[in-house]
Structure formats: structure tokens, C-alpha cells
Image (cartoon, rainbow, N blue to C red):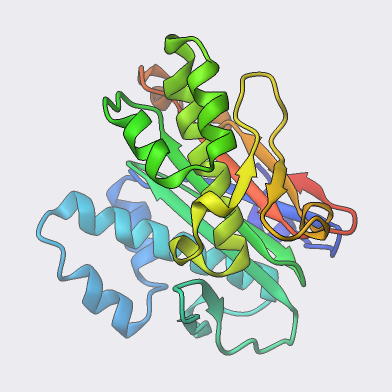
Length: 247
């Protein structure tokens, strides 16, 4: 992975970062120095040191990477949130239209950065979920449920998480999060089928407006993370003209 100082974000690219939140104490201290007063106060509300340090690393890394893309000090950044919780930089000092989205699960965070394009990202660890089919019936579209039910039982769990991350990435890119009904659009989920929007209720044109991809969150995580038996899956949705993904 290139150092932050070497990065330049062009309009036709997405920068995708993976951050291991479990860091040694010296790294935690360096990142804590980047936090705002409010963020430091929030870190102090965590009961367990492990949770506090994960929060510090996540926020500190977000500040460091965002500051690099905006060519300003990470300490000067002011983050705010839209009505539905999508984060953005409220004091864009250099007027560079950098947009970002992030997700985390367990000890891993992922962050996506673009210039002038809406972006959403999600990450989930694949784990046993006895009620996956019931959740799918409640939240997935009828077509997605048919595809899921038709898969061999051993493939359904991973397909469920593929579907969930792709749907979350899309609604996060829209800026609406889970306030957007998940059963009103369809994504691909079967094995070996590329990630994409398949159908959006009431809008054929919407399919052409978005690019979607899945990625392996293990690709840039520390070696010990590879030893975990559960694995993970991630998804990215972006509204492009021509987009390349830098990881």
C-alpha cells in the first residue's frame, strides 16, 4: 500500500483503504493526537480499552487519509453528517470535492474516497446465521429470495452476506442508509456472478448510473487476520463516468 503522502485522487478513480483497528499502543497514541475535542471525549466513554482504542484508530486513520486527499492538516478537519448519517467534511478548506464512506466489522475498517462522485461501502464478516432466510424474506426483494432459495444450502450463508453488503453499499451511496427500503431494488448474489445492480423499482435509468464491485477485505490485512476461519466480504457502490479502483 502506498504511503498517504504519495496519493493523488483523480476524478476517475476510487481509493479503497483497509485498516486493521487492532494496533499497538504507540500507533494508538499517534492517532489519538489527531482527534478533535469531541472525538476525544467520545473515546473516553468506552468502558473497555479495546473498544476505545479501536475507535481512536478508526477516527484517526479517517482523519489522516482524508487530510491527505484534501492537502490539509488532519487536526483541522470538521466532520458532519447528513440527515441519514452519511459523513462529510464540513470545512472543506481547499474546495476539493472529496467524498468518502466507511464501514467496519470486528477489527477491520474499510474506507472509500472519490472526487465529485457519490460512494458507499460495506463490510461484513461471514458467520453462522441460523435466521438468515427469515431476515432475507423480510428485507430482500422477491427476486433475490428466489435466487437465494435456489442455491445449495452450503452456499446460502455466503450469498446472504454478499447480498447484504451490496445492498448496504448502494443505499449508503444514495445517502439514505437503511431508511431506503431494501426490497425495492435487486442486486446480484449468486456465486461467480459479478456484483451489480440488477433492478431498481420504478427506474431503469438508475441501473446505468451506478457501478458496483465486491472485494476481499483480507487482501491487505495483517497476516494473523488470515488465520481466522470466518472470512469476510465487502462491497463498493459508486456513481461513475469512468472509474478505476485503487486498493
